[in-house]
Image (cartoon, rainbow, N blue to C red; front, side):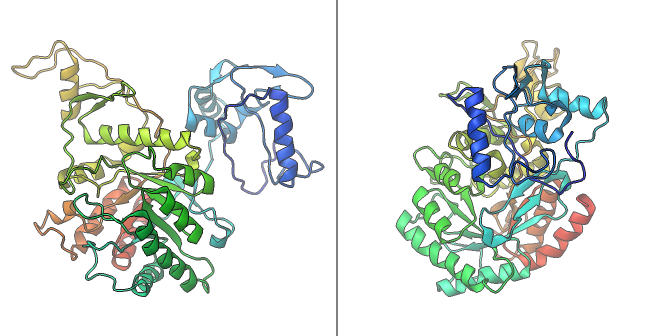
Length: 471
């Protein structure tokens, strides 16, 4: 048995494809442990600097003096089961012939071993941010993280006046940090397709001096601010990370050919995946989700016209793409993209149903709501078009490219059209109350991070709602 009375430790699992045999793979892992400084004279069940194990190798069962697969005792350890469950809950333990999900449930219900794991999210891979830049998420999160926004694109409508110099943008960013922002989000590109976009070189020339200025201004602080940058270009992503940025927010509908995911994987930085659609349209801000049953040309998977199901479908594709390019799950943050091509009605719908974004895949539906009745009827051959009563129930299998369970979520609901529509004043910079209300709704929906322009007036309300909904 492992020691129970030991310090907290980080734990994860990685799924790899290898040509190495189990024995050769085990020898490689031991070499890596030695290179990283593990001392094998220490208690093998106690704390150690690094411990690499082969939990499963396909469905093989190996029991030799050198190696045992599956990992002995893993069925009694949530910290070994849960990371596999996050990737695929239906992976089967070769010896016990049971899925890892069922083994975890048996631990809780039969053996009474509570799953006390705390899911954490890295905010940076830089040691300059302290030795432990991790935050708890979901049920273990006490405080909502606040990202203060610095918009520096020419057509920015979110600040009263534009920044006339880099120094002014740096001062604004530092003020956000001093007011209580955990993260500074720097935006150099307009979110609206009808506005001109900077080329990569010009974009980098705008972003890098601001990042360097923020880092220089915060050098006397114990920790520098966490810096997030929006970009869809790999060259820009690389330059801003070299300058000291911590998080990349990918704002394209696909990374195909852009290379941002490769850069995020190489640098090991957190990556925000934002939901948006092809921005070739000239209409700024509204995307019609009017396809009833639309089949993806490549995957042959079907998506629905429901806003949440559509977002889940599109984000699962981006998650799969990021994972395939080497970005680990624990570095991925999901953004439903309220600010990107959504009407204000769609924005409200997303906030109301935010928790559904990271639910399990939907396998069946029954007529319990307008959406489900509508869908159930369309799927049923016994649908009575005259009175729209559903005669027979039916099933719908939601098909995703990757599971979205457990991912942290960021929500941007500050000073955008859908909040301003309540006052019929578009592009108004003075709708703080509406923005704060939208932020509190995001907290109720279990958002990990909220993106705001007005940190100081938002902070106290956020902390109050944290006391109600988190602590």
